Image 1 (cartoon, rainbow, N blue to C red):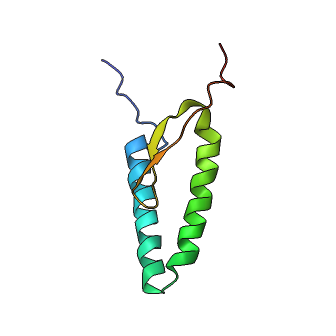
Image 2 (cartoon, rainbow, N blue to C red):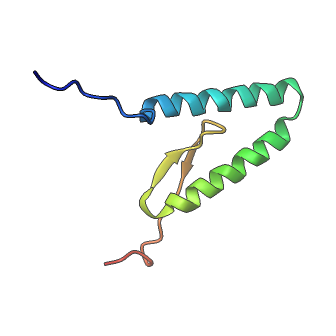
Length: 82
C-alpha cells in the first residue's frame, strides 16, 4: 500500500500572499477610517523601498503593492558580473 503524502506544515505561497494582501487591505481601510492615510502611505513606501533594495539585482519591473502602480527599476549593467 502506498504511503499517503503529508502536506507541508508551512503555508503555500498562494495562501501566504492572500493573507498578506488581506492584512494590507485591512490596514489600508483602517487608516482611511481613522483619517491617517498619509502616515500609512509613508510606512508602506519605506517597506517597499526595503523590499526593492533587497531584490534589486534580479528584478527589472514590478508593481508596487501599496499603490497598485507600476514601478520601473533599472538595473545598472556596469555593476553586473560578466
